[in-house]
Length: 242
Image (cartoon, rainbow, N blue to C red; front, top):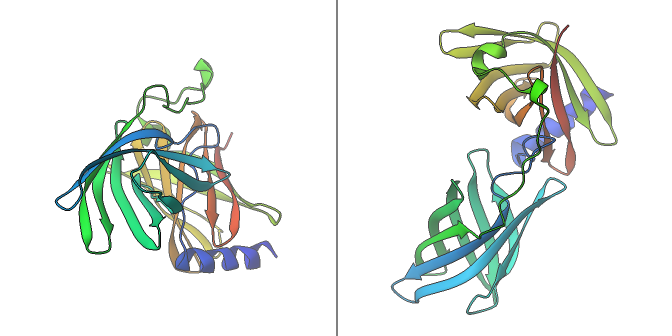
């Protein structure tokens, strides 16, 4: 039953892929309130506020103090922290897209035939507070080396159950190579560590995918995250075998 459910989730992922909030005990770095300046040759310079929030795995947004009412209809944030905000301005679709880095989002906006540039700087006091892990649970300095070994993995689907499997991680040159012996239709094909706290994995199911599993270190011996796609949601977690 669990395998049939996973197959339906994968089919939905292939069509409507969405990455859940990274890290079960962490706040997403993009969340917060931003002071925005937008410019174009048609409208000159405009200033307003954008508020972005991740609520139960779904991104929500609000635009305040704009020259004209803008109602946010959709917000997406991908695994590279590219932000896309779609809003409605009296029947005209306004798309605001940009890349987040170091408390700032910069990019382009478009509305019909009009377009321009914009930048948003995180407002003072709106930075998300990251959860503090106990000192004893801090990961090793080198994320790549410390991931080598045997792991136990669990993918959980809310209200549907969980799927457990074993995974071995080896190092080949500068890359980490995962192996899922006896995993059947499920396979982990890639692991990436951007820094000691970020753990991104790529999975396939019955050869379909790729399925991104984006997460963070929970401790030196655990990592995990949340996912949501195609109307389904859940968590994933890996723990080092003892």
